[in-house]
Length: 79
Image (cartoon, rainbow, N blue to C red; front, side, top):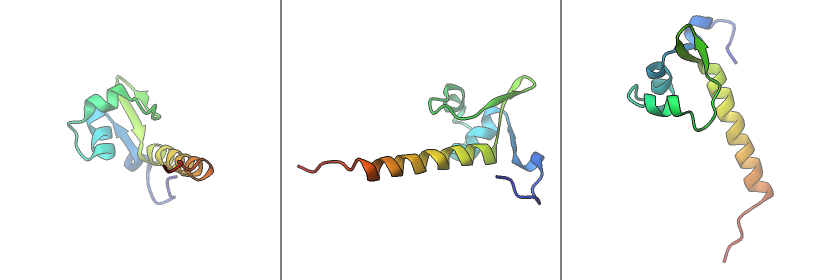
């Protein structure tokens, strides 16, 4: 979630290159943004793909927590 001192402009990512740089550390990973195999919360801003840093971070942390809970409730059997 955005804190009160952060503006929406600081949180907004417009364009696949900006999203790729935030998610993957490289603006060259735009193909992964457009493929969006993880189903991340992107939206359209005019004619461009967009997202918020806070929304992406929240979604990834939620999924990480769910994966941890699943691993605890269903530990892998060892041979």
